Amino acid sequence: MLRVAEIFRSLQGEGLFAGTTSLFLRTTGCNLRCWFCDTPYTSWEPEGHQRPWKDVLEELLADDCQHVVITGGEPLLQPNLVPLTHELQAAGRIITIETAGTVYRPVAADLMSISPKLSNSQPPVERSARWAARHASQRCKRPVLHRLIAEYPAQLKFVIDQPADITELEEFLDAPPPLPRDSVWVMPQARTNAEIIAKSGWLIETAETHGFRYSSRLHIEMFGNVRGR
Ligand code: SF4
Image (tube, rainbow, N blue to C red; front, side, top):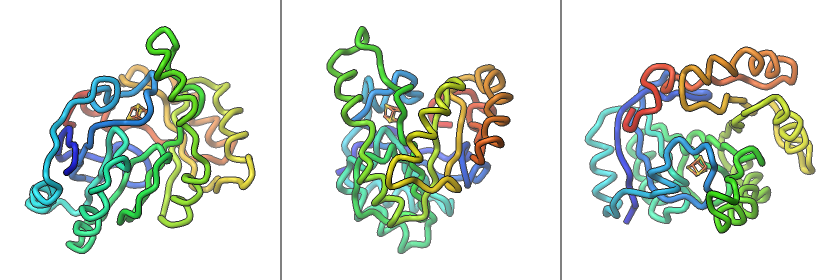
């Protein structure tokens, strides 16, 4: 079974494949609770249904879209992602998995799109003391992160809320063993186009100074933060 929130066609909005028409499988359920989560229906208030993974596979293969993006929530929490992704790859689909990089599974993936969470994602204790503590202890699993990077083509996307976050990002990358800087993208923490515009100026400059790549969030620019787009 797979717990599925939604399946939809849209444009990939972030990173290496930005602008690529893709079929999205969004699983529901997450082991983290970022305060800025833009899909709370997969984390804070998880929705969705358990579906046989072969039925999900059939629905995905019924669409001829070459790129399949598996996102969440945290998709790697779902054990049946392993056979599903291997079947998809055998059928010629190009698979991106979007993960926070805290869970390992031997999935098939052409791009592991990892968004490690910095301390700026921490939910306030007032919102949930239980989740604040759990988020703090779970958000960084460095051995998992290194394993994913070693076994898959990978990009690292960091959500940046304010300039001070860059100092923490540098420390995170340099902690031994260091992470590959040429795979690093920085993206504005934004759920509206106005927030993207407000942050993109300084973040583009900062990315250039530090040797990172900047990624916007095309799907928000084009559609707003709406479900199923
Ligand atoms: S890891 Fe992603 S899905 Fe989970 S709470 Fe954070 S932003 Fe939401």
